[in-house]
Image 1 (tube, rainbow, N blue to C red):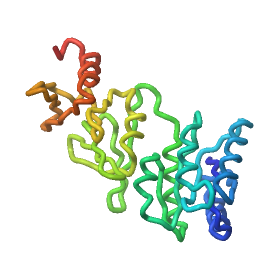
Image 2: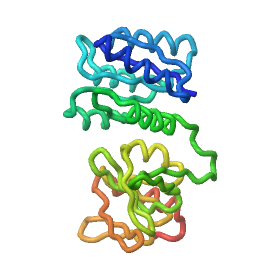
Image 3: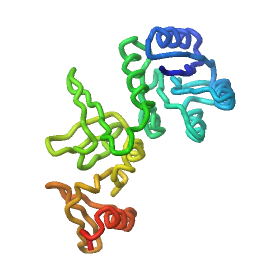
Length: 246
């Protein structure tokens, strides 16, 4: 079960959010803070006391230390809690997901929408798969949930606040950052070839050098490698396919 902190300088909004969170069976404990400074102090105290904190439901526009600044500070913790932004402002979504937020909710908070945010938080805080176990990404498809296994993904592309997973039988859009996916799958042989592209090394069939440019063949796709990543990509592929690429 999840232990969370709700942060909002508007008392009625904070009380409503805390009430709704406490109605969710997946939530074990809800602490509250009415401003960013108090929230930061509470988090430091919790961590110092060895208490677990899984997620922070965080407003953005607050006096003093606002939600985005607080999120940046939290990101420096050794094991930072996951973030869910709860705000009346749509324009900060890109910044929020750059800070690897699990979700971005608009006020007024609806119970159904909050339940979805809790589901995403729960998924984000689940233990990483054991070595050799295939990780699975749930993808929402018009009322259905399809589970896309890691082994089926050839490459992934950043698409704004989403990532598109390309598989043998199609592509799927999932709300997460490419950086988060890279951390999650790097041990499984996924390598960054461009700031917006992550590739499964085992699906790479060819590495090309043409006119100073480097490209990869993945299935029927030709993917460009950025100059910045060229050397690292080649070295990683050689290590993982030793004797195949010369």
